[in-house]
Image 1: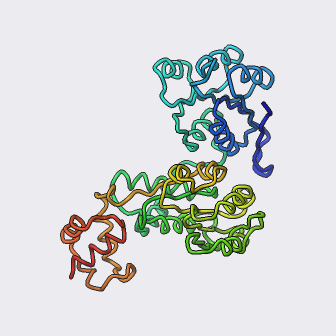
Image 2: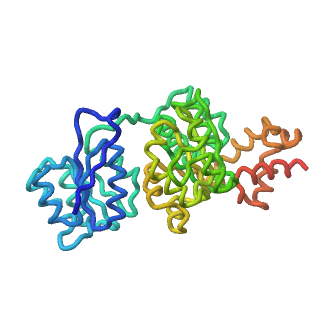
Image 3: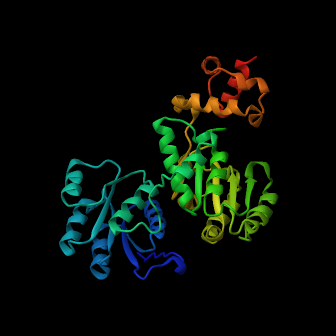
Length: 370
């Protein structure tokens, strides 16, 4: 099969070029892994089976091999053993839908990276690969500085004391540190837009322009003018947000021909514009429903972030209610909402539910003082 190579822009390239061999009998999984490895400044080659992989490895001696476990006639475990016989220093990551005990035992006893389970999570794969390669490619550890924590305390979706809220804050800190494009998913009115603006304000482009594009509210012609045309010509909003941030709402509502054009120009666009894309549905469900172009799916899957529904964060409700009641006008509530008592709010929540998340919570606060 023909070689498939990919590298990052030369401006981000180090003196050392990393070589990665990807072995998988699924062309879809191979392509996903290839794109993930581009974030590592990696030159990649692909093999569809173990025999082809061994021939390529003998020739190139790749630094890292990422192999599927369930392959015929040679399994990923058998391939790993043969590669270690050829070069004991080669790093190996095994991908498996359901790791068997013998695979787990081999990985642990031979100091391999943790197994990546299917369906493949690009972020997990990247994390394992960076550990294997001994460098983070510019990513920093999660910051815990007081200034950032204080700013999070003034962002409604990030308030709370639950473990889930703490995880939310940690993930947001990672987003802030990176200029890479990100897809933020979560149910309606769960705080996705507030988080997107927070990431922009506290991130690399915080002092520059930030614009929003609502795909579901524009016609295909308008989207061609504002985002990108079928021929790949960049639209007005993309050009206006160079060295800034562009928040794209409901990416699944972007017509498929324009999604295809965006996927083709993705690296060029994201090299100069910080893209933050929002969707009420998960990326996998969008693909299953045929609402996202496959190539765009691969690119978006590298950095996704899911905001939980409020029903999953019941422990955080006291903090959220208190914050809203301190400035009720900010949430289009009457001045009387400032006097709302938590127990009364909770009673309304128990009756009406939290289906619309923060909109439902605001309704419960207003209803409790009537």
